[in-house]
Amino acid sequence: MVPQAARRERPGGVRKTADGRTRATGRTGLRLRLRRDRTLILMTLPALLLVLVFHYIPVLGNVVAFQDYDPYLSENGFVAILQSPWTGLDQFERIFADSAFWRAVENTLVLFLLQLVLFFPVPIVLALLINSVVRPRVRAVAQAILYLPHFFSWVLVITVFQQIFGGAGIIAQTLRQHGIEGFDLMTDPGVFKFLVTAEGVWKDAGWGIIVFLAALSSVGNDLYEAAAMDGAGRWRRMWHITLPALRPVIALLLVLRVGDALTVGFEQLLLQRDAVGPDAAEVLDTYVWWNGIRNQDFGYAAAAGLVKGVVGVGLVLMANKVAHLMGEQGVYRK
Image 1 (cartoon, rainbow, N blue to C red):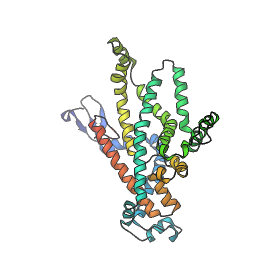
Image 2: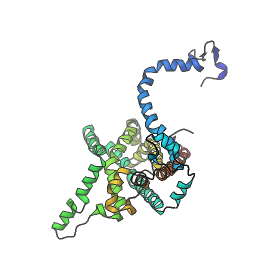
Image 3: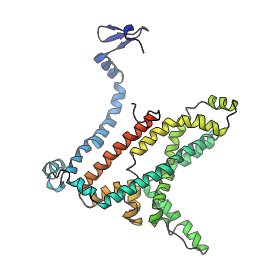
Image 4: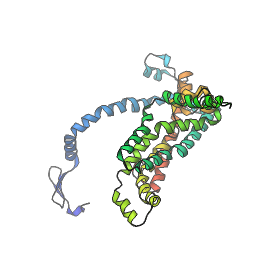
């Protein structure tokens, strides 16, 4: 930073610092930056337009949470919103008095905690194992194999698990051939939450590995060599060099994961809801879909989704505050 006394303003919005360089200020600086970055700005405009049209403008539709919304009042959805009667907080009172809603909340939180404890550490451990492989070709092959399921649809993932753990799966058939009664984990409500977590680990652990390997690539080998010369073993180097390098990424992904706590896999759970029943598989996302799309109670479903969104924002803010207390940046700076 250059001291204020060392700066000298020049006409035309140009400032000269003590090191002899000139810097545009105010509106002139903004015009210069826009002119300089106009190509990049034009390239990002389509993406910004898509985000605006499909993410921010639909947020205005949350007004139906305070209405008895009827889409059949008009062919124009906006006109139907204007013509629908206002109900105030009646929809929210219905939600908090509905036992099915609280069961969905319970299932959502249990699934989130299981995925946080069992799923979140897996990419870190696998990234450390892959990073310890000396041969680059073996490392690349292992990384590609682990990342491949990320591109599979949930239909394919559930089909694979059905062929392995289902009543007619490989394991059940092998047990029957040896005179042992088979089992069907795909329809067992007691193990359903662990099954969902295992499906998520198999499908999405590869994406987390990519992120953590990118963070590990920024750690120079000279740090490991210096620690080895000082007598540090493999575990001490991992504890004092590798994990501190991953800590900012871990904190950021943990904040994002906590913010996504109430979204635990809509398509995955909807596909398996009928097999285990709503008591085990109903979460907030499927609860909103079932009431909004199947029962066409749009105002009620919008109110439930709005409650979920507000709680999610609160979780992000709290998790980010914890990251700041730990000395990390989190999603945004203080």
